[in-house]
Image (tube, rainbow, N blue to C red; front, side, top):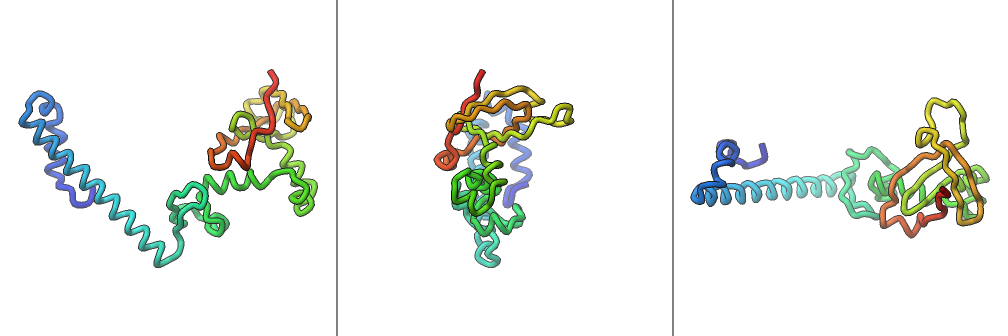
Length: 185
């Protein structure tokens, strides 16, 4: 039961919900009761938000995501790197993909393995995929081992039976993760 709500009033609302449709006096009463319940729910939400803000001030462990601006309480997420970057779980996930680009400086700093990993990223129509080496007979393969032909914008063409989907790239990451390929049917 929500903070400050009278359980008896909630029970009355539940028991008489079908009757208020037919009786205008009861409909008015139920409407007023519903408005009070909604106000109490909103007050409860405001109270919880204030409590989280106080925790943030006292502990410094909650923050607003620098990308999507959602409020994060670090104990829910368990990540020093995310906290350092001021990112929520989802934005940190896409941040990692955005920093796996095959540019010369990144390759120089992180080596050829990094470049190879980055070149396996496939982005088509705002969706992110990654292909692994084909492993015939493997227990798990991306998309159930279905065959995909991928033509990259840089001219490469890859045929794989091990393509894995990472999801739809959020709008605020699309400039950093632009489409780089298309599927050939």
